[in-house]
Length: 395
Image (cartoon, rainbow, N blue to C red; front, side):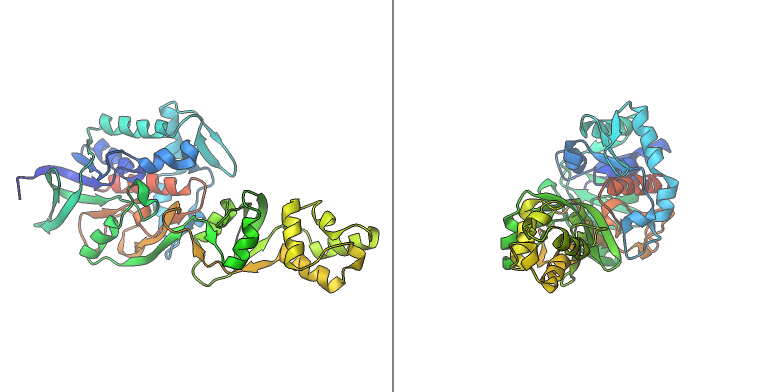
């Protein structure tokens, strides 16, 4: 191996968590190198939030995350809160707004967040090396020796901030999991999260007729439920409520959709049958549902015409379709369309107070590569900031 450049800390992955870690380590006077295999920094930040970066959420707490170890994220979220990051954004005079449900977005561009991170990292003398691919990692005499396509690096602390498998077109890979396997660290099975759902041909044929239609809906799996917009697509269902529930969905599980929550549709229709017997049922439904959706439900139950001519048991079946639509997705649109990866590095292997691997001194994992997945709405970025902060203060 050619002579290595020595740093106190090497961070692999120039995304949200990696930058935050490098900045905090640099603040403490550590010599820090941040590398990435891509030619562009923080691509996930750049494309997020429609280009305006939903950088955190005012309502962040441990209940907003999916993990096999639900208590793990609490320490990091307490050490560096959403309000701490907001203070940093304010310091850089970045204007932002709350869109809904505590979601904070830049007024202008996600590039402002990237520029902020670049300024902070330069301020603390972080050496940033892009287009640098790791070829080999060895741990010898309490030091990590890393061979890349450009340079060799030796460090005491090695931080893996390479994210998960979602959005491969911007460089996502299994690198972080490969490093974990090298050091015999357990990995919780991964699957795409915050991703559109797909359905069988029969249902998809019906849904595709509504492609582009958005409606508020409550979607649940067991006791887990989300109420937000649902979007019909030519491939199935998307929209915030669908993306949220997808992080909890696994093969063969059914989902329940209530298209008109807090209203007993059966009771409403029976009352209408008494008051307006000559009114056509699809027109009644169209007073509180989009007409296309009302017609779809009527077609699914083969019901049409004046409500006086519809039997009560048929009305009940139709109502059940609206309030309690039960279906089993055939799958998701995969990592290509997923915003996050659910699962990852087993947090039982990691110290929640430092992000260091318990059995491997000097090795840290932060951000999405861990088995911590936030809900939709800025929570995943806050996890990146918080976990990166914690590691940066302990490397």
